[in-house]
Each structure stands twice: as C-alpha cells, then as structure tokens.
Length: 336
Image 1 (cartoon, one colour):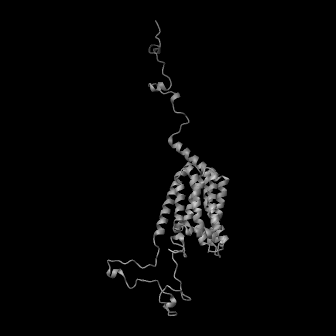
Image 2: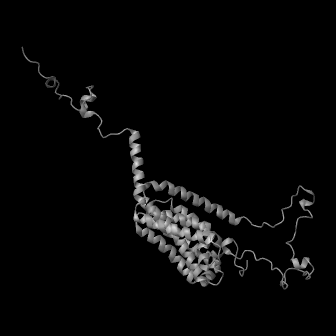
C-alpha cells in the first residue's frame, strides 16, 4: 500500500504556519496570543496618571523650583508686611506697591512669565529679560527728553493704547508655536517695558526719585521671572492648552481695557434730558453747574463774574482734566 503524498506537492503551496494558520481558521496558539506585558485600558490610564504624579514630585524636588519658590514667598511676605504693619511708607516700599497696582501690566508680565516657563532654552529667558530692561533703563534714565519727544510725535495722541496693546501682545505670544515665540516674546517684553516705564515716569511725583523707580523695576522683574522659573521644572506638551487659555483671557482683558478708555467717566455730570418728559426732563433739583466754593456760599468772599480768571486766595482751583496721556487725555500744557 502506497503512502499518500503531502497535498502541498500536488497544489504547489506550502503548509500554513503562524499568522497564516490563524487566518485559515486554525486554533489559536501561544505564538499569536497577546503578549503578557499588555495591560487593559484602565490599568494603562492608571500607569499614565502615576507617571504624571511622579513627574510633578520630581519637579518639586529640583533645586531650581525650591529657589524660585523661596524668592516668591519672600516677595509675598514683604508685600504683606508693608500692607499689614501700620507705618509710614518709604519711597522704596511705594515703588513695588505701585508696580502691583498697575493690574493690566501685571497681567501682561504674568503672560510673559508663562512663556518663560515654556521656553525650551535659557537663552530665550535671557532675551525676554534683556528686551524688557533694555527699554526700561534708558526710558527712566532720560525720561524727560524722551517723553517730550514722544508727545511731539503722532504717538503722543495715542499713549493710552500702549498698556492694552502690551496685554494683547502678551496673550498673543502664548498662542504662537515655539519657533515664533522666540521672536515674538522679546518684542512683547519690549512693549510691556515701554508702557511700564511710562507709568513710572509719570507717577514718580515729578522729581525722579531713584528709590521709587528702582523698587518698581525690581517688583516688575519679580512678577516677570519668578512664576516662570517655578513653572520650568514641569514644562512639557501639557502646558500648551493651559497657556492658550491664559492667552485668550489676556486678549479679552485687553479689549475690555481698551473699550473702558473710550467710555467717558464723569460721575458728577447731570443726567441726560429725556424728551418724553415735560421740559425735556429738566428739574430744578438737577445741578447744572459744579458746586461753588464753600467760602462763596458762606458769604466770606464775593463770587467772581466768571470762572475764566485766576482763582481767589483760599479758593478751590478747577480740576484740570486729561493731563495724563496714559488715561486717554493729553498733556496739561499741550494744546488740543
């Protein structure tokens, strides 16, 4: 009796092995089973969460974070002591407290600080810092001639837009890719520094107090650098979405600040007349003029024929409106 030859010799095909056997309907073997290292989706997510927690713990243990956090706490304690302890404020204290009072520029500096935390190299941190100080230093050292030249230029009529533009650029930088941020971030820092130096120069009591200006700049550097240096040990791709959310908020705040500068602010102005009411809505109780000097009301001095002359001795001078160009007005000596 002859043995039957293998079928592959008749058909010209080799026997099916491995994955081909499984595809042909052969029973599963150890070679095509899932690897023993594969984990269910729930365990994989848990492992990723554990890696994130370990990454955060490692960042908290770095010397860079601890040093930045120590500087942050020291600044907070100094500011808290200045505000809580009753005492006479020195010019040095007034400087950093003044910086914290410029809320829109503080937000712009915080936006740049987020960019510092995301910077891939230390050279970008240095570029942002030098761009900021490179504008602030000459502006404060030669403020009077520079500011006079600015007022004579077309920019002098639009100085009130500098702070909103700084906030807008700070938020826009956070939306850019990493390559574009290397160029845009120093430019935004220069605009923020220019706006900040204008505020200092116009609010240092007009006599150029060095302690006030120096403390204000130190406070600005504290806001600009310390939060970003605290964030750097945790930098990664996960910061992209939070940074863009912060950038969106900054751009919206810039729009709100810009609109508020165009809204007239006159709380003591009489109400507008209502045509639907008798006599146009005018009443005898509505003041048509600002209140008189108390001395005139008491009969101590005579009322002037008009209010265009000099103010009598002991009188209250009329307020000069629009003498701060950063608030939408022009210089007090500048003609409209």
